[in-house]
Amino acid sequence: MVSALITVAAIAWLCQMALGGWQIRQFNKAFDTLCQRGRVGVGRSGGRFKPRVVLAVAFDQQDRVTDTLLMRGLTVFARPTKIDYLKGIKREELEPDVIFPHDPGCQNALSLALKMKH
Image 1 (cartoon, rainbow, N blue to C red):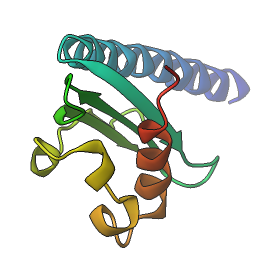
Image 2 (cartoon, rainbow, N blue to C red):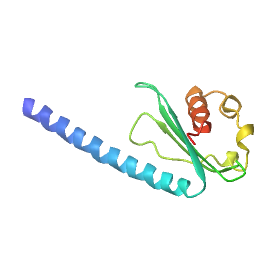
Image 3 (cartoon, helix red, strand yellow):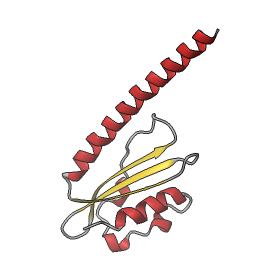
Image 4 (cartoon, one colour):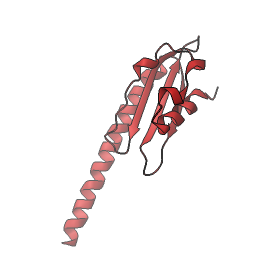
């Protein structure tokens, strides 16, 4: 009985590693594509038991949004998605509490993404 539990735990752990690696590859591929679209700001939020949010925004030379990347979720099944309605908006006009009125995780991630390092 104990060896069966250990076997199940080992299989679950291996599945977690495989699916986590797949998720990271999907995100990195989408992020590389985003980085080719302009300067990129990245923000993340979330906690241990809240859905984590990673939001990246690419800006052109005129500080307009050229592309976005949003990944949110608790599991390895979260996939990167686009936020199409932000394209073309100037950085100064982006207001996280207006864009995501009912999602504090996305609000926090967007406000961090707007504070680019350089």
